[in-house]
Length: 210
Image (cartoon, rainbow, N blue to C red; front, side, top):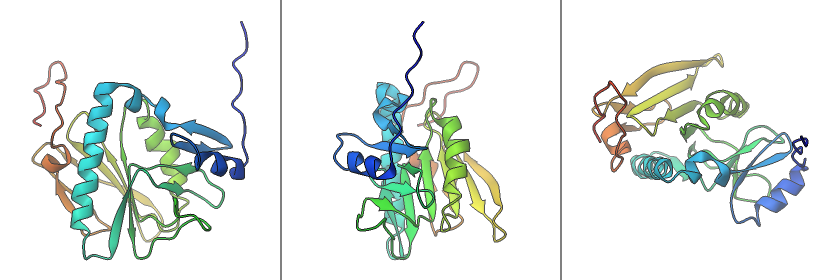
């Protein structure tokens, strides 16, 4: 049986050069590019529709509520640098309060997010919860992490305390719940977050309202 080839290691400069001319986005961790189009959330049509619908709803609802607050939101087309030399990730949504800061002379890499939002998929949930969250915590400005399920109305949050400790907050659960963020003046009903999403019933449980 042939050995599985090791991924090609790149320098940071090589990654940035390739990323800025590529047809699709890639995250960069430990010298390896990870194309986002290989994720199951992009390859599976049903999952992709739910993921994209939730992401678009969040972008609109949060962006609208940030008007006049001094904060602004950016969609997943803008990557975030988690540490002086990376990794580089594409969060589903990033919120910045105050002037946004960008990497060097490029405006495609955000350095100072306040809130980061990830819409979960089956293939990336563990990654988003653990490795990516730990890496995000190296960003000094980062204060709140939001994980949004795509298959049920369920949103979790972690908030950085003054002593640097991250504490989980009570989740927003069910179509009548409201997502209220702690670090920015935003509250969004989950009915708006999941507008247009049809949930697949879980055997033995009543179907979630859409």
